[in-house]
Length: 120
Image 1: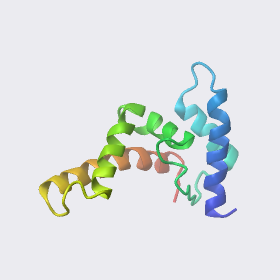
Image 2: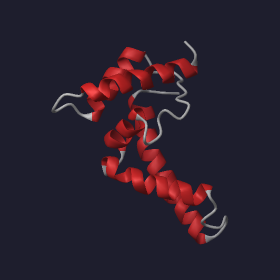
Image 3: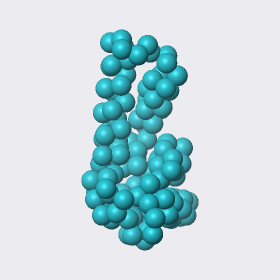
C-alpha cells in the first residue's frame, strides 16, 4: 500500500471512530485502534493534511500528544499563521521565538505520534 493510502486509511478510520467514541475512551485508544486497523505501525505514511487540527485525526493527535491537549490547538494555529503570513519579520528575534515555539509544539504532537507508531 502506498504512503498516501496508508495515511488516508488511518484518517478515514479515525473519522469513523470519533463519532462512536465511548465514555472513557481516550484519544490514544482511538488512535491505537485506527493505527492497527490501517496497518501503519512501522510504515511510512503520508497524511496529506488530514493530520492537521480541525480534522478528526489532527484533533486526536493534539488531544493525545500535546501537553495541554486540544487546548493547544488555538495557540499552534496562531503561531503557525504568524510565521506563514509574515506577521513576524523573518530573521528577527520575534520570528526566531515564534519558530522555536512552533517547532516545540510540532515535535510534541507529531514527534510523539511518529514515535508511538514507529512511523518513518
